[in-house]
Amino acid sequence: MRHEADPGGSRSFGVVPPSRLDRLYARLGTAWQELSEAALHADSDLVVIGAGRHGPLRRAIGTTAAKVVNHCDRSVLVVREWRGPLARFLVALDESEHGVIVRDYAVELARRTRVKLRLFRAIGQPARPDTPRQEAAPRDALRRAAHEALHELSRLVPPELLEDVTAANGATAWSSICTAAREFDADVSIVGAHAHRLTDGLLGTTAARVADHADRSVLVVKHPWRESSA
Image 1 (tube, rainbow, N blue to C red):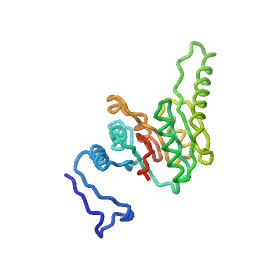
Image 2: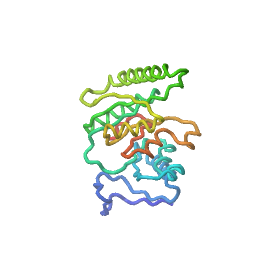
Image 3: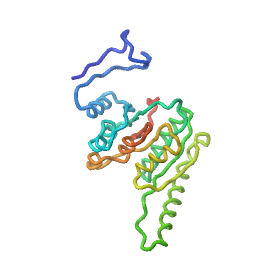
Image 4: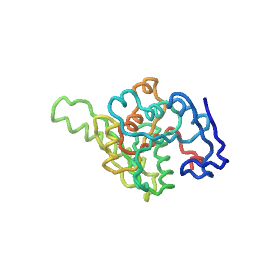
């Protein structure tokens, strides 16, 4: 079941100016499926969904926000509490080609919102060394490689938008991103998500886990910036 209201009528919707409101949807069904289908039907650039704090059991079962991130083919903004005017974005980049798309999306968004960017890469744990003396070498090598890759990506970021670049080790990529966002006091963490295997949709992607565990808003980028995103 779906109900569509005429936005041209006299009724307003909350604090959304009537001139900015395209239409209203009310759909009956599973929330994440209906949201994903509505976004596809409307050719939306971005799905905006709220998320509260959930316990381990709810996250294990799967939150609506995480399922939208995993299954919807549109970029997704998971909104938590309002922190005031936007000032800082943490941009999590990996070694994939999609990292360039995430960087460019973050730069265009930063230009329009006049915020600072911190480029970040989560470093995987190195293989277990044969001896304790070998323990630091792989970690240092991974950190140097991560910084080199980030500096290469930062070359096309306008200097006035770039705060710095940093990389960090962590038990998992998603926990490293959440920790980095807190340390940077980021208003939004920007992460990428691209084509995944079927098992990723079932077990959860890094992006979905960041969206579930972060204590601030998360923007999951799936496609390049389109001018209509304005």
